[in-house]
Image (cartoon, rainbow, N blue to C red):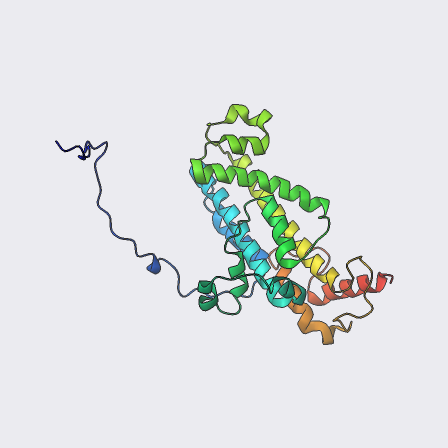
Length: 286
């Protein structure tokens, strides 16, 4: 027998395959709509939770909901950053020197091109979320405590998601360390076992971080338009402080962030929000 012969003892039966044509697996009729990114996220979550029946709880479906929820959050981040760059001059200027691949440049339309700079970014974790807000939108300084807390909880969801994606639910050592080794050392190499309550808690963490990020960026952009880097009132702004005059510009910001699915508590429409904004500006001291 030749020294180069290969052993051919099968450990299982073999199966044929059909070459995959992935180009026909996508919805070419899809069009971006005008709903806010947070409403797109909420609609995706609604489509996921139909997989769950509290009476006949299915653990595998629960795992899929967690995977989908983190994916929906990442999609939200890409969309909200893209749309912010399109409406906000300071954010646009912040991204002007960032590189794009040639493929993105020749394939994306103008309205989608900003998302191409996010191709290599993952938002499945608190650090990348915080850094991306600074890097792409240019909002700097200390984050509010509510957002910091929300990101910490979301980070736990991302570690659970990592177990599901890479280890079919088993907890790895690195994930245990990030979750807290003293509490999780006994869980290493054990599979995730979700129940309905645990799923609700994980889902809530995703919803809270989306809302906190959405409010933070919205308020940060509006604040940047009326104050300087030290928080002092600007004497000259883009606003005329007349709603009819400012409506078109203000609506760009409002419709990018305001939810119609979960109504904001302090205003019911763009005019009400504008009035609150104007009152805040008038209350500032130079």
